[in-house]
Amino acid sequence: MTDQSKIRNFSIIAHIDHGKSTLADRLLELCHAVPEREMENQLLDSMDLERERGITIKARAVTIQYDALDGQTYTLNLIDTPGHVDFNYEVSRSLAACEGAILVVDASQGVEAQTLANTYLAIEHDLEIRPVINKIDLPAANPALAKEEVENVIGLEAADAPEISAKMGINIQAVLEDVVHHVPAPQGDPKAPFKALIFDSQYDAYRGVVVYFRVMEGTLTLDQTVRMMASGAEYGLVEIGHLLPTKLEPCKSLSAGEVGYLTASIKNVKDTQVGDTITTVETPAAEPLPGYRPARSMVYCGIYTEDGSKYPDLRDALEKLQLNDASLTFEPETSAALGFGFRCGFLGMLHMEIIQERLEREFDLDLITTLPNVIYEVTKTDGTEVRVDNPHNYPDPSVIAEQREPFVKVSIISPPDYVGNIMPMCQERRGEFKDMQYLDTNLVEIHYHMPLNEIIYDFFDALKARTKGYASLDYEFLDYRASDLVKVDLLLNGEQVDALSFIVHREKAYGRARRICEKLKENIPRQLFEVPVQAAIGGKIIARETVKAMRKDVLAKCYGGDISRKKKLLEKQKEGKKKMRTLGTVQLPTEAFMAVLKLDE
Ligand SMILES: Nc1nc2c(ncn2[C@@H]2O[C@H](COP(=O)(O)OP(=O)(O)OP(=O)(O)O)[C@@H](O)[C@H]2O)c(=O)[nH]1
Image (cartoon, rainbow, N blue to C red):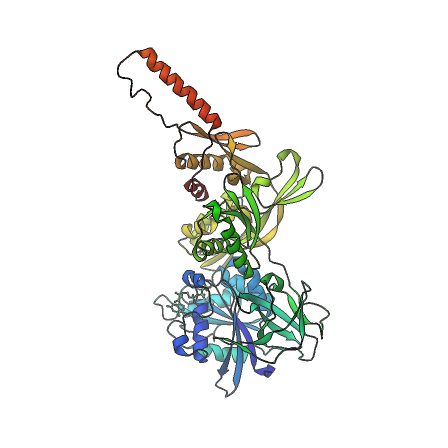
């Protein structure tokens, strides 16, 4: 058991790319946590893909021993947090496991949208927030200005904040000294009924699920049986221990204030959801810890394999990924155009891209994905409520009494120069302007309420492009609102292609339908017969293009000769084509699907 007064539980929060992971590496190095030859850059980001993209996807934790300047040895539990808005809930659970947070601010960028969003989260959890100014080695660094921003924008005392360079290893010790002296030690009674917060879990092929948790109250020993309070599932323990940087180190007990792991032959991370409370059958807690929320998918799309026979492989791959990702959901679906596949749910667009990339890369699958969509709520005329995650299943307009779509609260932080570019962009996407505030002379924060549907495609990229990368974006779910939506169907040669149906606001239906028809026309190879490409709302055609027929030169063999014979041949050809058209089906090439997906507004 570790002396509670010598424990510090903290996490590092930052805007993306401000140097969170690099600083974490330096802290480990300073505590000799990892022998040098094992030191791989960014140890806390363990997935290859994460490292490549330079973002932190899953939260993880590590325990290190720090010999402080006051001669004492402290046990530091560093809990890493994901850096993208899609994973905000995991961030909030990681923070709930801490007493303090290091707020890393890039000295050349200052305070940005996620610096603020993460700080608000940390404040909500009553954390002691310690600002640190990073990247002072950069020529563009302006630590004084960054501190001023922290004071003016966030309202945190920053005069004494350590000025460091995580990359060059400058002044790292000041950060740890600041933590041990200012972040409070954990409290909690080791003799109380057992309560621990799950902030992460990972599937391991040999051990089953490894659950990471922070003990809030009580003491856990190996002879006890744990109970997950949300699911009610009970497990006999196999192992408990500490999370050392290079290995899991078993121990006999874990008590209030400590961070550790347990294994118990658990098969699926769904049974140990982030945010759930662990208690024991021997000393059950009366109430779970506050704040549990099951993972909620926000964005859906259909995923199919290019080669239909690979369907079982796709199912295996999704099952494998799901073992380790409780927020990925999937259900089988069939499409007349694409065959057998799955409707998958994701936390957001980044989560979706990551899963698609992992499927293609780690499982070697060639995929076709349909347009992403959000979940719509429909009240039918008979009073029943349905939630629709696939446009193809959208109820017929004649039975719809009311339809609602999800809205999000968008916060954009940008230098004032770009406000003129940002506002029309939000307006075009049906944004409702809420307010705008100057945070400082060189930063404004703009709030909009926007339909989630309008920002899932390309809003983030468009924002970056129109502000030269200076603006930053954050959003959170707000509510469902009534909206004038229509389902647009695409027809090829009069036949509906189910995988291409989409839901859109009525005002945008014509524009989008026309562009999709044009795109399809460009990408569908000519057939022997003429192929109409149509978009329709209900039975009404709202856009049309035509893929011209390939014309075989039936007159080639007819040198000279009599005009009536030529006419007869052409007539015959025309007849044949008519027949073909009614019988023929058009194979939609993969490129056509891709082109529609990449449709930029
Ligand atoms: N010049 C300089 N670059 C730094 C410093 N610290 C970090 N970087 C660089 O900044 C980039 C982002 O650093 P990360 O540590 O990956 O940032 P992060 O905040 O963890 O990013 P996410 O994991 O995506 O949230 C990397 O290219 C680092 O090498 C520093 O002190 N000076």
